[in-house]
Length: 314
Image (cartoon, rainbow, N blue to C red; front, side):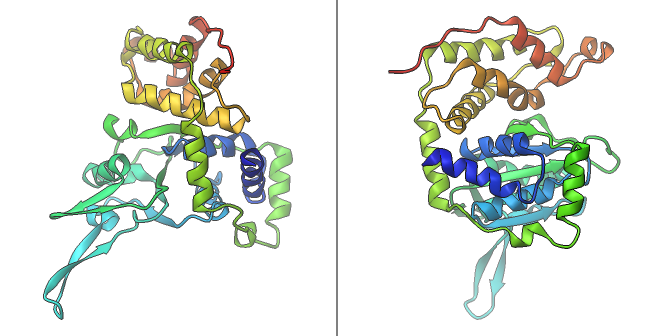
């Protein structure tokens, strides 16, 4: 039943986002693993539309925050306003009080406002004065940023980057798919016609199933060997944290569920290592001189480490 639901979700989103099945599956992995997602790509490839399509397909509440230099932390989390009738302060909830929050162009606002998301992303709550407001589950922040244009932007601090479970790219469509896009969008708007095919309970149930996926001792050791290799690599100034190890574990479990398994295999680790780890490392001068990218370093590590043999959990 879960396998059919996952396929139906992907097929439904494909009515809006054409030719990007692999990328849709990657976003779905992050959602099933209960993690936040950073989408980094050039303008116009469908980042915002993809997030809206997923929110509508899953029947989850959705809010979009356009990040700008003058955005304040209270514009995100909410603010207390004095009520003259009751003579008390009332908290007006901000746009983070939704199941899916799209932080559009997150690197265009100040570090102070970016940091307002840290507690929300990590603790899934908002603190205001002496009060703490819990967010409804499920809760995800899907943030976008442009990797090319840096004028008027603020670099995301490592602490905030580390809160994103994965970083994904959408990329340009190929010629055949772009022709399909022109035909599909010629005289209608598919997003407006999209129907919801899942529910909050479905997503919470799938997340629970992900946590129950069996992970062998060999897989745990394989994950640790990968993250340790980033901490002693000559091409890196900074390796990844234990939070990255947990993120890779969760994404591997989500990948297993998507492929219809109740246990993790090494391919689940290898397939997802780049999108989990690449945004968490810092290149050394040597790597930059050799024109290496973050993805190149992670790929080299994966290629050099022995792959364990893992038996199915019986």
